[in-house]
Image (cartoon, rainbow, N blue to C red; front, side, top):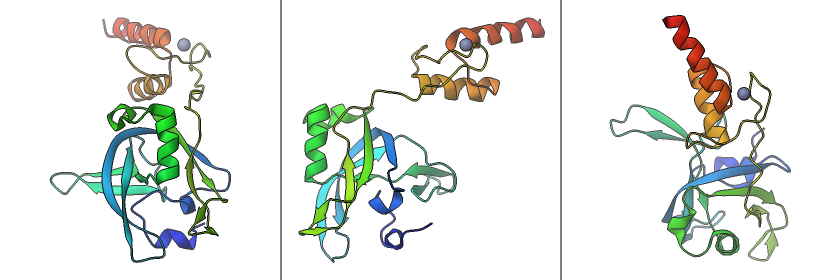
Length: 187
Ligand SMILES: [Zn+2]
């Protein structure tokens, strides 16, 4: 599936990149001031743009291909999101007016088909009016209990870390046990 709107501007997150009813909970990495092209016009608009921490899933059309300093290594990121006045007001409600305080915070975005642009119902991206709290529950491979934040990592961070290191997702206790087991095998 590829909504025709996707073919215009692929530099920013837009409603066409969301499936019906889909929500994306994303972590804010950076807030910048940028000039955005207004869809279906030749005008531009200066607005805050939010960059996210999350990497895009492989083959996801929401991703942005970036080159590193040497122009070689490619990093795939979720598209940044232009923040219009309505969404800006929601952000302020959630996290206050100081934009540097947004860094590391999460927002849930979704496509609202009722959003109007220039008096015409066109649909647009909205931020949910609540702080995403319910982290996805990830169960530990060994003890089957939910993985909780620990070692200065979030639950997700813990799962990512153990997956890379041990090939399975583990809670802090089980990761410690596996570490000890690996050690005694070596000795
Ligand atoms: Zn465990």
